[in-house]
Image 1 (cartoon, one colour):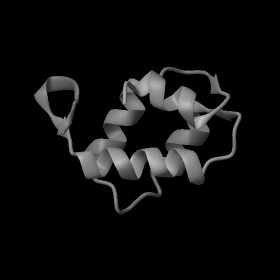
Image 2 (cartoon, rainbow, N blue to C red):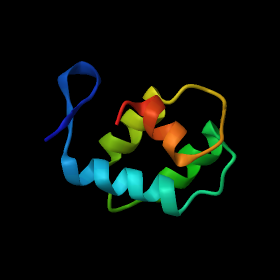
Image 3 (tube, helix red, strand yellow):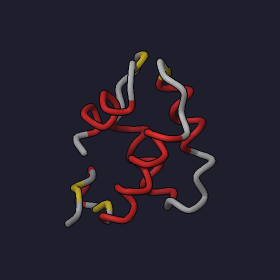
Length: 75
C-alpha cells in the first residue's frame, strides 16, 4: 500500500515505515516542527522526496509524541 503525496506523488510503504520508525525511536518529545525536520533530514536511507513531503505536510507547532506527528501527517 502507498500513501498519497501532494501533486500526485506517492510514498512507498517502506518509506512510511522508515519515517514512522524514525519519528518513534529517534526524536525526543515534545519536539517542534523544526527539530523534527532537522532530524528527518539526517535520514539518508529515506528518499529526499519523502522528507520534503513530510516537511510540507507537518504544520508548525510543538508535538507531544510520535503518534501526534503520525496523525498530523495522515499516516
